[in-house]
Length: 191
Image 1 (tube, rainbow, N blue to C red):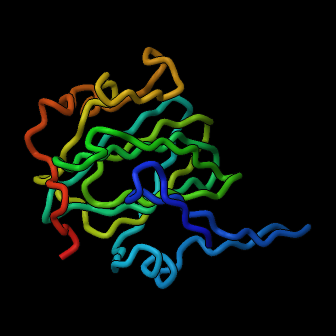
Image 2 (image 1 turned 135 degrees about the vertical axis):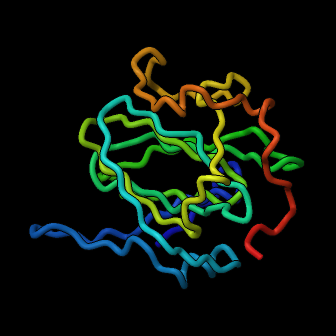
């Protein structure tokens, strides 16, 4: 496995080694020991989730507040997405900045989105299957979001806004500057 720090160093691309031949392929999609050695801290994933979506579906930008904050390790099994992580740690030198990475069934890349980041993705191909691990359970009372189209974030979702398919919840999320419930840079949300 190869780990690549992005422009926001806490967000990490994971590139697994794919062993393939005429029969197909084999790939290790997760190794706790290698990931934790690279990060320097432990992650106890407790739940796996999967969604299937069609072209133009946008899910996000979502996060959960502490004590239910989540780290996510996301990947695409089939199809492709543009996956986005936004730094929402007040005081961070990269506050309000984002990382966008194309994840696909073909490239097998994964993205580690740590606590303190909002996460979202837009589906680039029909019949896309998206899977992710989380290290905390869903908590409705701690569930929050940020508007996907907040101009201050500068996210190019690569699909015209009028063609996007969003949930009612995601159509009404607040802009980043309207959001009071965020994280504080330097606080250890893994303790």
